[in-house]
Amino acid sequence: MFVMLPCGGLGKLQVVDTDTIWNDVHSSNAARWAAGSVIDLAFKVVTRELKNGFALVRPPGHHADPSNAMGFCFFNSVAIAAKQLQQRLDVRKILIVDWDVHHGNGTERVFYRDPSVLYISLHRHDDGNFFPGSGAADQVGANSGEGFNVNVAWAGGLDPPMGDAEYLAAFRTVVMPIAHEFSPDVVLVSAGFDAAEGHPAPLGGYKVTAKCFGHMTRQLMSLAGGRVVLALEGGHDLTSICDASEACVSALLGNELDPLPEEILRQRPNQNAVRSLETVIQVQSKYWNSVKRYVSKVGYSLVEAQKHDRDEVDTVTALASLSVGRTSLGAAGSNSELQEEPMEEDGSMSL
Image 1 (cartoon, one colour):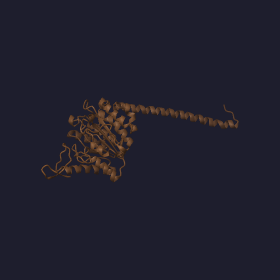
Image 2: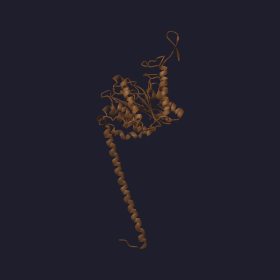
Image 3: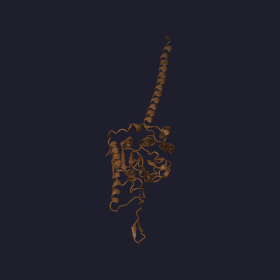
Image 4: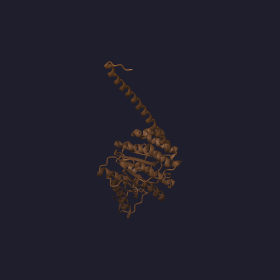
């Protein structure tokens, strides 16, 4: 829109956050190409022209809402792609996973009342003291969209920083159980890499490795028949972005992933993470039955969780075989009685 400037002339009002610079020569094209690339990729994946894909684009988008640009974001590429999938391809259920270290406030706002889009964000929150300040665990959606907004809001700052063990625990106890229960038709990932190791405290300060991003991608591929679309969001360390992107693309290609170190598999999530996940589960258990069984297992390492799951399966299998055994005995007894009855009717004697 045009406004009257202090000098008395007409000027164009640009609603842009103070940290988001608009370059008249390049920003418009870059932002449109980024959004268009994500839309094009999402359409190709949903229509099965491609199995999956990664839109390596800039600028990012998840902070932008319908009327404001902020946090280096102008057009919310993932949100626009989701809306286009709804309107043009009639996609009924869309999962958006946002693992950027900053909460995707723009994406949350767009779909806060929409039950057909499940938004799950994992982000540094620190009780609202980390940019952009939104994304508390009790922000769950509104009206018919209540329960379809899931915020894994990490608390406790960097004492210690969150890393692989904490993100794996979040995927195990919150993200994947809810995602499977929702059963989406397509998965869109706001794949910001500023939670990766290599980012200083003001930009994240977490320690998630490239290998972990690859393994999270592989888990998401178990949903929606493998229809997974990643779109680059945040990330300020070029080495971290390159390494994490390579791991995610390798997962999408179906390559064998580099294994996570044994010490990570045996590491329990830190206490700040445990408390954060317990809060999320307490809030979301009202809407998703699948998370209830993890209330007492949040503090497990991945190895401990897998062992516990195996023990549960063994117990169920043993009980089932006992039940089958009793049924077989009962059936055998019934058959014996049925066989004896005709003999008695004939007046025959049996020893």
